[in-house]
Image 1 (tube, rainbow, N blue to C red):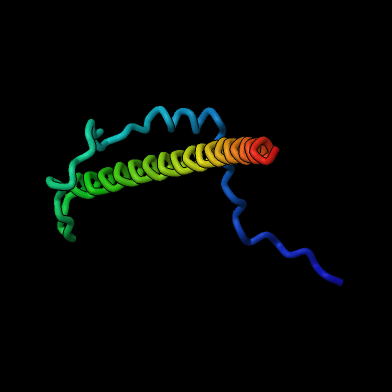
Image 2: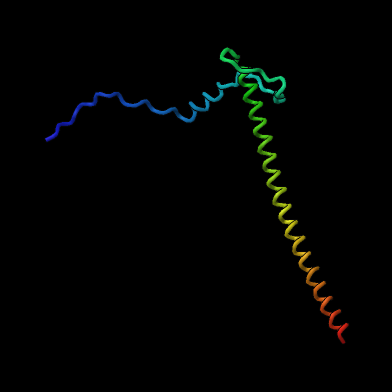
Length: 115
């Protein structure tokens, strides 16, 4: 009923082997210079359409550094908040214990005074 059609599309190319991929990775090298210190906000270049790639990288790395600092500060603040809540709970428990002892002492004192 149906006839088998002839293949009109070329077969897909074979993917590279692991050895070929490793060989390609050896040829790859980074061309931009590495920044030792992130640039400060005062000497950051202003970006315009005619800015160089180095200017774009400086701004990117500065914003990345600022993001890392913000994340570290946020994590530190959350840890401090947790510690503060734990200390508050401990202090409340000690306060409740002291108040119970005071109430007990007052009860004993009242009983002694009425005798």
